[in-house]
Structures are given as C-alpha cells and as structure tokens.
Length: 293
Image (cartoon, rainbow, N blue to C red; front, top):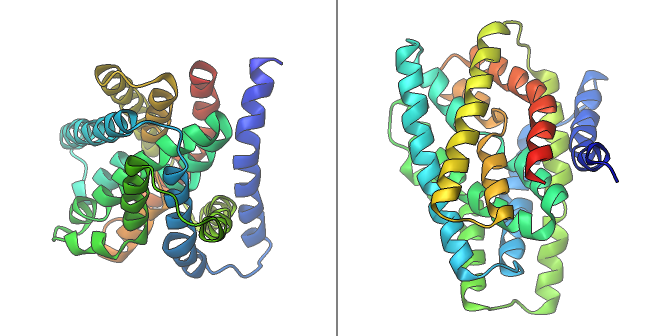
C-alpha cells in the first residue's frame, strides 16, 4: 500500500467528520456548541483519557518522559512565541494564546488514534492533559491579564488524566462493568469533538487572511521544530516523538476564539487564525504524517 493511500486513510475520517459539522450548520440546522462541548469536556473526554491511560501499553518511564517532554516543549514554545509577538509588535492578549495552544483535543486526539493506534492515543492524551492545565491557568491570564488558576480545578479532564496516570503507574484496573461503561462514554468524544469543530468553523466569519497565513506557517515550523528537539533530548520512542510533534503543530483551537470573545481580546483576529490555520492543516498534517508514520 502506498504512503499516499495510508495518509488518506488516516486524515480522511478527521476532515470528513468535521465537514459533517460544517455542512450541518451551513444548512441552517440547530447545533448547541456550548451543550455538546460541555458534555464532551465534562463526561466523554475525561472517560476517554482515563481509559486510554489505564489501558495504555506504555511503561512508567515512557509516561514520565513524555510528560516531561510536553512540559518542557510548551515552556520553550511559550518563550519563542512571546519573542515573535513582541518583535512583530502584536497584541499579546490576542496572539499569545492561539499561537501557543493548538487543537490537541478535537483534532490531535483522533489524528493520533488513527495514525498510531491506541499507543499513539495514550501519548496524545498526556500532551493534551498538559495543554489543558496550562491553557486554563496561565493561558487565561495571557488573554485576560488576571489570574485564573482555580479554573484548572474545575476541569474534569484534569482529574481524568491524573486518575488515569495513577492507575497506569500502579497497574490498577477498574471492574469490567465500570471499564465498559467508561469506554462507551469515551467513544462519544472523538466524533463529537470533530463534528463540533466543523460546526464552530462554519459559524466563524473571518475575511483577513494574509497575516494569519504567515503566523500559521511560523507556528507550525516553530512548534514542530521545538517538539522534535525536545523529543530527541528526552530520547522519546518513535511514536511518542511523532505524537509530540503532531500535537504541538496542531492548528489554532476554537477554544482560543471562545476565550478571546469571553475576555475582551480581538476575537475577530483570533477567528481568522482559527480558520486559516485549520485550512492550512489540510496540507501540513498529511505532509508531517508522511515523515512521521
């Protein structure tokens, strides 16, 4: 089977499910993004993360290395993006969050699953958990200019990740009836997130493309390069390294737009970054997968 066919098999489900959401809202049908997002982030995603980590076939050393690599990578990415934003004389409250945090949930988790199977998903949820904690603490401060550390304590995904890591580290398992229930709830997460991503993109109106295009290219190259360097330093396995690179190079998350809207940043500019970076990812993600798979 050719590399091209393999890549198409990986990315097609991701973009087709997003296209369903995009088409759904463009046809004028109702879709409550707030309800579905709350359902996914409060129930489905925590269950997905917990079960994925509990059943992960990775040793504690790999878990620790991947966690450490993700933390270090995000610290370096933050420093690099901060310098870029300052040199370009851009507004930090508008540009820092979207350029640092990618769509590691809606897009990153399913892509890691389709590309690298359950092992890839296990590594992806570790990176996703680090991103969630960072995004809902210091990330909100970047947008609003005020502390928001307590928001992390309200995120069920954080508890799902911590419990999953605890069970993985100690080799514990939940009873079969509970595992089956959690697994079933978690299976909702990926299609729900992808369809919701398409719906959100379908509702965003962004007409300025040149600056978002340049910043998207800068984001992808910077994040992928930093992730590769950190992965080599931590001597990650091939799959862990590939997942770290993919996760950090994800397009701008819709969450960045929602936070900009909530805290008074330039949400229209962030919307442009979301749309353009997601459109560009149709090209960049398959290209990266050619080298990573």
